[in-house]
Image (tube, rainbow, N blue to C red):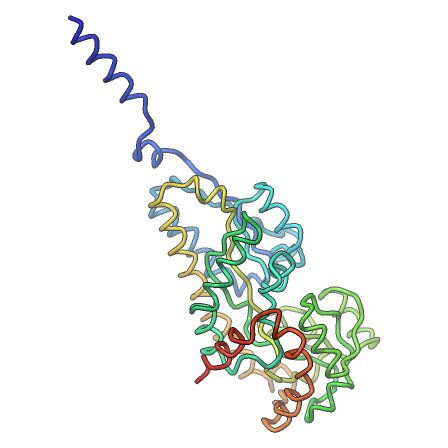
Length: 339
């Protein structure tokens, strides 16, 4: 009888203990803020991520995309700082944030914004998915304690400079520009080195200033430019290869660590898959818009290779200043990755 009571008591204890299957039976809700756009660029990737995660977890992980209901084009545009704070506090669980804003919490992320650092799309992807990207991901988590980067995305790719009529045919022509003050401290230094005049504003305000002729241009990417409403105002699009617009799909690490290991794996895999989709969409949409330049009534001006090299010489002080901070070896690895 005593043995039976002991066995019964042990059985009750074992039944009451949480198990892996119990953890998987729980429901998890993710509020996901995508703080960039246009929606056309991110829709395919976000839809795929939501559908695949919910399917692979049998509905145990529910994802609620935080949209900007005021605009059909941008999802919570210019809300990067607020989204980061909300993610750190756990008010939202996931976000997609520009790397320039992540650099406010982990300054080494600004290595990605050194001017004329990347040669082409393949070079960017090789760095983001390689050793340097992994180091930055680890550093971001170690520095913040609660921001885990799941994947790097491509928010339209290489920047272009759209102007009313200013063409950049030489490195000296940068001095003709007046652009909105960039969010990256490294880009600010590059602007200064190229003698680009700047003013404090945001992307939306810069469009208004171009329209009113108070400034002559703005920096953007082709997918964003096509949805800016300024196709009729802008007559020249300058391609310089100076900067790339990137973001990270990030998750609150405390929330992530509470998930079952299988769900962690699924979310990580699907985030990377979504990032690859957005990168492909960035290139596809950019090429599509370039091909329609004549129809859309704007001229594409490519800064000649020899003038790019002159501009690189002009921004050498930026590398001199930030090289010791980021690590000369890391910068060299990024440059060598293009070979």
